[in-house]
Each structure stands twice: as structure tokens, then as C-alpha cells.
Image (cartoon, rainbow over all chains, first blue to last red; front, side, top):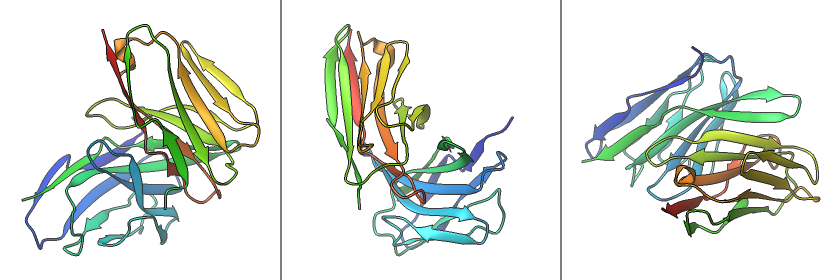
Length: 114
Length: 110
């Protein structure tokens, strides 16, 4: 079945460590996104990529890094520079139709700093 | 920063009452979408509005896009406990990236 797969679903990180969240899609979508959601909060854009080998910072990119070496994959690294990384991370991708984009979300990854 | 504002942040209703959430943008949107996120889940696409003044219905849900394409609303008639969740609007201001509203968390008392 087509869709977006995020892994791991739950991740614990020690302070000072970098961690990488995986996001893979087989929908043949050009654009991919990473959002952060804090408990009871909305979605904040971290990074997005419209095309392979290109990505743009969103509203809260500091402390995060991404790569887009393949169309299907858009991993997010949460670096030790991110001061408050505990949150729910959502990866998404979009199809570009004649009337706009529809976002499809992965099931999310819960990151907890211990 | 946040370019799409959504209100209210929370709404608690008695089952059977109506519910409305509103989104406003400072810039014209090429389209607006609505998503529902159940507690513990991920956002799921509900609908997209593209045309100025567009109105779409899905059973008890009515979606509107303003004439200026800067605001939108989602109205639920006669809420049910299955409507519980957070409703997000998402607008595309510049065709490059999509911005989400902060969401409205709906709780329904049986």
C-alpha cells in the first residue's frame, strides 16, 4: 500500500546526543515536510523540501538538519543544539495537483529526552 | 512566523450542539485545507477549498472559503462524541510551503 512511513515511533535520547528520525514515502510525491507538535499545540514547520537535493528552513529550523538525497526519503536529525527536543514529530508529503496540494502525514514519532 | 491564525483554541460542547472554528490569514491563500487529528493520532485530510466563496459539505460538516480567500471556517452541526479531536486549517500563502493554524481542540460531553 502507498503511504508515508516514519520510524521509530518512540525514541528516547540522552542529552547531548544527536538522533535521526526516518521518513520514507512511496507516493511519488515531490514535496516533503517535517513538523513539530508539542502537547496541546499546533504544527510548526521545521524544514521542507520541494525537490531532491534541495530543502528550505521552516519556522523552527534551529537545532535540526535534514537531507533529501532521494525522492522517497527525507530524514530529520535532531541535534544536541536543539534545547528542547521532546515533542511529537510529523513527516508529511504532498502531491501537486492542478488545484493545489494535499498533505499526507506519517503516523509520527515521539521523541523524549531523558 | 505563524501566518494562519485559528480560533478558538479550545471548544467544549454538549453533544448535539453546533461547533465552528475559524481561520484567518494575513495574505491571500491559493487554497485552504482542513485536517482532523484524533487524540494520539496524526492529522488526516478532510477537504480542500480552492475557489473564492466556495462552500463544501461532508455530512454534518460545512466548510467555507471567504470571498477574499483570506479566511475559512469549519462548522459541525449537531456534534457527536466521534467528532472529538483537534481541527486544523492549513493554507498555502505563496505556493511554496503550507502553514497550519494552531488548531481548535474540540471536546464533546455526552
